[in-house]
Length: 236
Image (cartoon, rainbow, N blue to C red; front, side, top):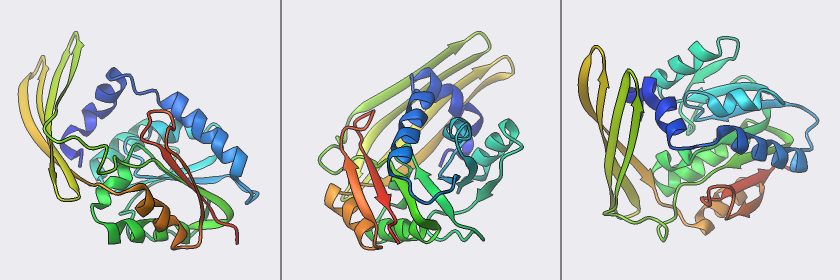
């Protein structure tokens, strides 16, 4: 995951113009439109460094969960008053249920395979109260993924310089890329790599994953950054 770059994560994505406040507000508006559980307990799955979590706590009783302990260290440092769990979305077990579960920024793609997509959504559903909602921002579909493209991000601050480059690839229904980092600080210049692999699932496969565990599901293909959003409602 982002273990090697956890301390740089916020700086990189904020420099790319990712607007967490706008995204969190849109999530909140959708929740208010569809939530019927009567509660405000929210679990942010694959919360990373907790930026979405931080905005969502303005409206909800939030907790976070992530697989990457390094990312959680950053989140806990910023928000020591919030409970963050280390766990895998496939099989985490918490002693309580929630009214809202979010899984944003395409983190669902890290499950890699279709059986695991179904397993992950079912596990989220098991932690949801009746009348609650699950919001999942998907990774690209197979038709939307374009291997062979080069991407780069640059950060230029007085005492921090970052160049991050990657080339997209594909192996069947698995997308992959290796982030190559060059990082400069007054202490020195370092370089390192991170490999990421995410499953490419079709819209029908996402919809089926929700319906297979009894959720009513709505798909907005143009949500904010146009990766779309799936909203599952637990009626009983």
